[in-house]
Amino acid sequence: MNTSPNKSLASYVPIGCALVLGLSPLALAGAPVVSGDAVIRAPAGDSEIVIKTTARTAGAIESLQWGGKEFLDNADHGRELQTAWNGNAGVEPITDETFNPTEAGSLDDGGGATSSSRLLEIQAGGNKLETFSQPAFWLNPSETSGGKPARNQTILSNDRLRKRVVIGYKHLPHAIDCQLTVSLAAGDHNTRCVIEALTGYMPPEFDHFQVFDPKTVALAPVDDGPGEQALPLVFATADGSHAMGVFSPGPEAPRDSHGPTYGRWNLKKAFRVVKWNCVFRLQNLDGLAGDYKCHVFVAAGSLEEVRTTLAALQKR
Image 1 (cartoon, rainbow, N blue to C red):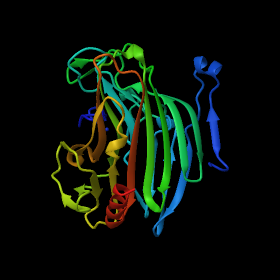
Image 2: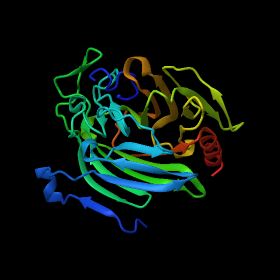
Image 3: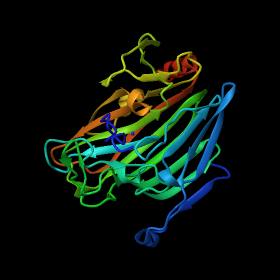
């Protein structure tokens, strides 16, 4: 899954006047396509944050712009700003990407115009977005990752993802409030699962990695990794004009979980991309099934605007 640096890179990583699309229960069997093309926006500082989803990635966030700059890389279906998870399917040890539902689609979708994931509902208007989808597994049943065979028998998982995104939080225009509900099917037989609540693949110019210390509300440089730690991450351009940060409130972690932790990868030399993620590790020997709710904030703006936003979110 996206917790591996090789994710997707080996092959190429009140709503008001709203758009509302969905499928009736009878339509699900026929799998008609719900268009995932939507745009939400809201003012933030001297610019506005604009978020776009597309049918190409089954409603995953393919573009986030602020201050005249694109913050996301969307070269294939493993990148974007999206959610994924990797389970053990009841078999130890858990292995990267081998039972890995991915919001935007599968490895074989590549840079193509369609997704193996199924978007079931989308509602978008103003500064709010909601989607409900059935993610595809990253690997098809005949593929391997790191020499380990896929554990899934189908390309489409039986799991579901419900996502609610709001640009702006209380008095914080640079905050993006993301509420993700991962629904694991009992038939998956997972006893361990790593949920990548959100991952962001960003252009290589966002290569100044920093951690945010909630005690001092200060930023400090951190190495390129790959690595994972407990402090929220911020990725910025060299001049600090543009930055993105991620933070999840610890008390709102999903049940049966440890976390959050935050991972980072600098892959710009090989793949012209950098990556962060926010991760929860689930374990229940009696089985993992049902809804697992994750709450993640993304901050976008200048480096100082991101820092002050993260500081305020700590005190909310």
